[in-house]
Image 1 (cartoon, helix red, strand yellow):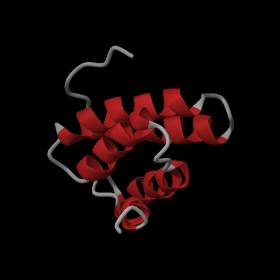
Image 2 (cartoon, helix red, strand yellow; image 1 turned 135 degrees about the vertical axis):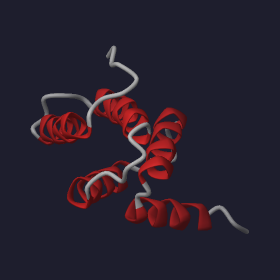
Image 3 (cartoon, rainbow, N blue to C red; image 1 turned 180 degrees about the vertical axis):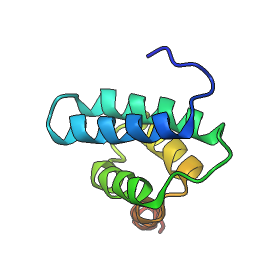
Image 4 (cartoon, one colour; image 1 turned 135 degrees about the horizontal axis):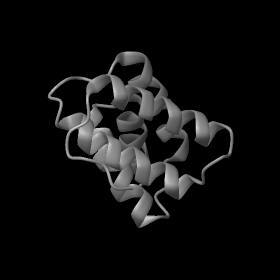
Length: 103
């Protein structure tokens, strides 16, 4: 996906909503969904604004269901999105999954 570095907030919101809709309706695969979210998150960071809470929460719940420590690529992308969007549900799930590795 070739996106400009900066995208107006309203368009970004629409693009996030569209990605969530397409993923929920099995129109895009998980790998594509994560890549799209990653690209949109990079643009969201450039707005210096928080993503509106209902979309942020929707992304948070969706990513927490996708959390899978068996895939390095998934972990890498999801961690980046979680940190940049401030996703609390997914962050807590990540923390819990790391607890099992402590001995």
